[in-house]
Length: 248
Image (cartoon, rainbow, N blue to C red; front, side):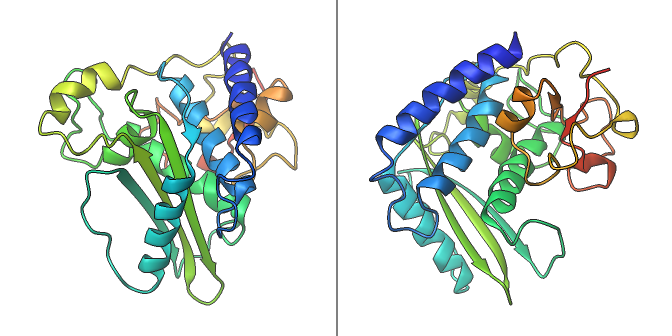
């Protein structure tokens, strides 16, 4: 059921992305293929929380790319109520795949979403004193548009940015709005609630961080339950990097 729902959302997103491929991300470091990858990852996670899919917005793509390039130059983002921003930097870190677009985008979105494990409380919209804002931004129901930025500097690092609109962070009542905008995550499909140490790769070529939900579900395998019962396992750990695995 979850697989069918995801594929339906994925196909609708592809249709939207293809329709706007000549403009959304065109001419930017994070071009149309990069924007589609970012969109696909977000909409997979949003489907798990009953949030509607986002569409790619060229103006947000431009602002996200500008923000990314500014960060590379050592400048900080300025506060705005036009969009909510998520950032990820791999600077001086050795992690396979982040020097390529596919690995950087999938790794960044997954890292933002992984804040769900920081004791997120769906009734209060808070974490237990831990960061949860990136997770909220990925799945916030009231958002409709997304644009992403990417800058890979081989001698420096990899930088990824996402801009979401309408902005979810700009309201003083964000915590009051959170229960209506961030719904509890759906349970894994039968046979997919497998602990990290028991996971077997779906296929040798479907491995982190290059695998995405579409690759995995099309091969009738499980994707990324975020180790909900294993709070000590992080997405970048050795066991935590088996994102696409066989069903039990």
